[in-house]
Amino acid sequence: MSTRIDVLTGDNALIGGFIINGGTTPKKVLLRGIGPSLATGSAPLTGVLADPTLELHKPDGTIISNNDWRSTQEAEIIATGAAPKSDLESAIIATLPPINPSVPGSGVYTAILSGHNGGTGIALVEIYDLDNAAAAPSYLANLSSRGFVQPVDGVMIGGFIVGASTEATQIFIRALGPSLADEQVANPLQNPVLELHNGNGALIVSNDNWADTDKDAIIATGLAPKNAAESAMIASLPAGNYTAVLSGAGNTSGVALIEVYSLH
Image (cartoon, rainbow, N blue to C red; front, side):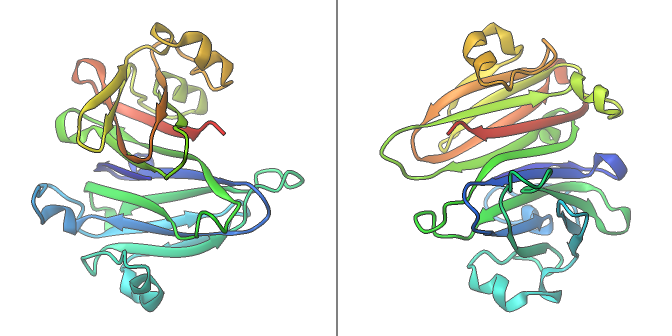
């Protein structure tokens, strides 16, 4: 999964969470924090984060951090074929154990993308599964990102890939705002709006208030949002690239959380 947003300071850094589930085999992942290279290419952005710093927080409290990707694991990162374009961008390769039912909190990881020396700007955090899907029983079961949502270029854009399968994959996506106040998050987005687009950019489905559509199916997942103003959707998706866009109704701003679940 990837998430792009305007990264601010303190609690308004970009926070990405993911869960590894299935079997006992650890999963090898690549995390990237991208900033300067967003200002290049066919659709260059302005106001990008000049020097992103990346942290990976493990369930036991240990932290792996990286500022400039060439400073550690350079050869291993190049070998993935996904090395960042700018030397100021960040990357981490880690092999991480999945959920162990006998160990509370296991299998849950957090990536934090911030600006070096308090820098701010638009940035992208990405999580790649480096394992052969057929050979590795473990999988990325839940992906989430939290950040400060603003209008126009400040919306949160989350990208994810549905792998090849003989059947469509059931995906559940939700956008949380008001209920974050229950976790003492300051300035939550009061009315998040969620859109799902396919790889060509076409809108597949949108939702403002989760109970307006598929209410019973959403409740049946056990993942229904707590607040009626929050958004959620269930989609049956063939293999391909998809983008979830989280914005504030009426061009409002605030901290919000987007989550993507594979409904195995």
